[in-house]
Image 1 (cartoon, rainbow, N blue to C red):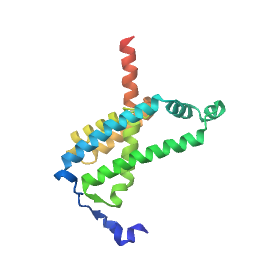
Image 2: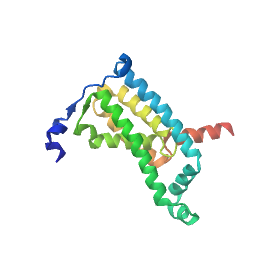
Image 3: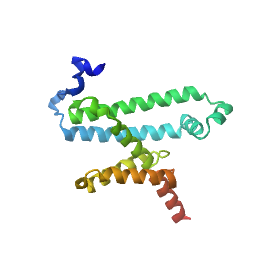
Image 4: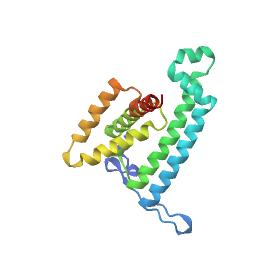
Length: 186
């Protein structure tokens, strides 16, 4: 239905013009990069703070065993709702930066392959670790860079690594690095 509305641009989407900022600051791709990088650092700090708090302990308890957390007295439904809202807020920031960077918004931005790519990044990097998805994103970027001339080979490589990680490294690449560090320092 939204694809037929004029104000959404239909299936063609909308081209966006960058906003003008006060004091003559130009919104260039480099400006957006630094803004996104600053937001990433702030977000990681906020997430670290959340994970170290009582709320973070409750989140980990629910992830480990929902029934046990409920039995201990955690309001699991409320904690899940708050976690979902926090996730939605920070995901919105990502969408805003992507839209500003591309200067375009349309149905292709929310295609299934974009969602799968985010899932792959999270699982390959390590869903249980704060820096896991960042490591997964670096892996995906390097894979796409080095297999760029080979067509869809990067998708085959990422898919194969995804399956291997699920089978042999449920904690992701970051989890394996943590295990390796523990083994080396013992």
